[in-house]
Image 1 (cartoon, one colour):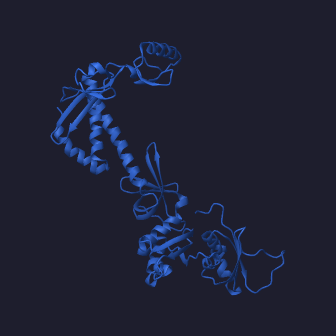
Image 2: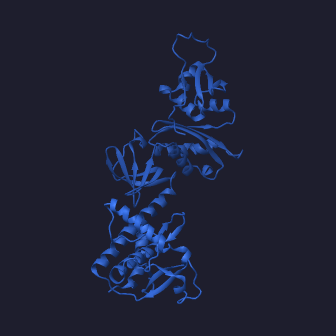
Image 3: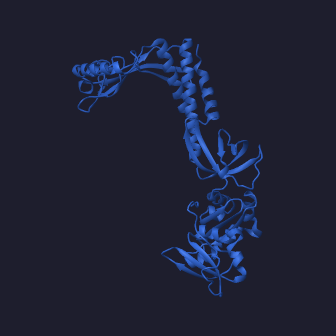
Length: 412
């Protein structure tokens, strides 16, 4: 026997555990019960519908007919022509099963969608009006059937398989929708396992994938430790949603500062550009929409507390915070901080700039292995040459002047 009164508790538990809407679970159970009822008590081709009231434990079973008129169905001649055509095709199709049902809708030779009349699923308008005089073509006629309290073993197994499959699909869709909405956000998870350099992070009811290319090269990842990551991409897969995360994405830096700096979260201070070499050094250009708020100072925080908090999260990555300026020359000069730029010459057509610094600050402007000028180029979007101020031009045969271009694969 089936005790439907237990469904209210079961449905609530499943909804809480799986994060699936209660109505969707009830619909899944109704679909499964309809399949089970049809298998034990119905006939092939019938459209059986089950409605549950999980609160009082009642179940209503009905057979649903689509009401049609002559204009909606295939004529006898059209049916005969289609059957002849199908018979010829069946002779060539080895996969055809004789017990397959006819399709409900077929396109005739004129391109019109018409119904292949099936007495188990359709009813003519005149016949339907004997039951309901007000019914119209295209509407449904619902005929109540006797509910059954128990089902056979095969029917019960069918219902179980339908419920498991539908709930699994609903759970996957719920997880996908949840994390698709979090794309571009920071989440926290626990490092579960590592396989061939790929780190799998437990986010509660799904694992996120942290590929080697999105890991900070100097960081040590310990199993069981909690980690913050940036959701870079969410995709659907045959096995369920795939959550890809990153700790090297430039926007990860933006989001960390949004958490630490209330002025950014409120929109008073804006991050205009970020250039990052994860695990080593980053540059971030900021501006303030309030003349009373210092953008750089807000990001640095009192005694550097805010920027230090972000640097600690990134394993000690150095962060240069500079003032963005609408004036390109000033912006480029700021971008080469901590070096002091004396002059900037722009070549607009080529989007190239020559900057002049004190000879004593040349190495500071270029940075170790050219990192400072390289990050400045990424930050500004300009090719930047750095030259010592006040020194004569060297012959063309000498070593090239230090410069930096934006790499073709630089992240936006």
